Length: 380
Figure 1: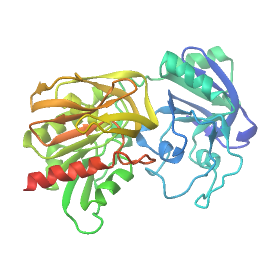
Figure 2 (figure 1 turned 90 degrees about the vertical axis):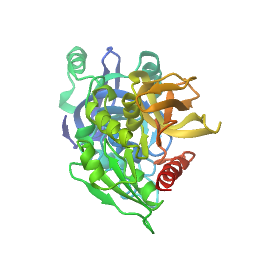
Figure 3 (figure 1 turned 90 degrees about the horizontal axis):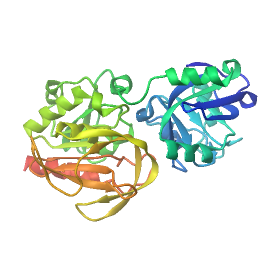
């Protein structure tokens, strides 16, 4: 990625998809060039949390909501220490942010962090194209990087694909750290960071859990060195088919029977640990309005998603695994994609979506309480 930030708002920009479709607009954020996988997010709010979610590493995010940047950027809603998206695509960026918490404009934040974006294009047409053709590689070019379309297309087609990408170690912490319990400490949890969002350990801390966040390279011995009451596997980017090390660590946890909870990438890791396969979705689930049914209660939740891969497990039968019986606990009502797994003979479960609700909705917060109940049951 090469960038500068001078005169971005008036600088021509072009977006080139790997199938040859081209959109022309204006630079937004930094001026330069960037590559990634083009995906779309359906959330009308929460763009700051989206931008700073490590799961979006190496992805160019298209916002389906037409007006973006209205509330600016604050210093409290960051999900990590930096913006992780490779590029950003909006239709009508706010000229002036208006919110009492705002400290700077979204355009300024993107430019300051060197994130190349494009505005003024028909994001509805782009989204429809991605829904029909699927997520694909894309490049955004502005300023001196704009050349003939054929040359730009060739560069996009040379960029790496998301399938087969092993990315979690690129976004995870390199050193362990502790998020203390809020109030009385009740439990200790070892959280394997595969691209964890800041709100996730906070939600556990609210429930009296001291969270030891460990690097993606942590071993089973590292996990049990903190004497955990439970083990958590986080969200993260990349293809779960490449995540052999986290799968091995999770199998070690399952063998010991320690209460286990995984979300997003962690759900895919549990699927692989149990012997199921994973596959790439056509265009994935991203946004904050995805309907999911909890099959254990029948309740339907409106949930926050960010995943391009899914677990290939049978929906309507109990499966025999090396760790006992397992079943699909949650399913997406839009397309019947597996959204959760649970073991029936060991204290372990996972969901494909984001119960930490950053940003919203809050329907799935009960899953952290379910994790607490497993640890209480194991202690008893």
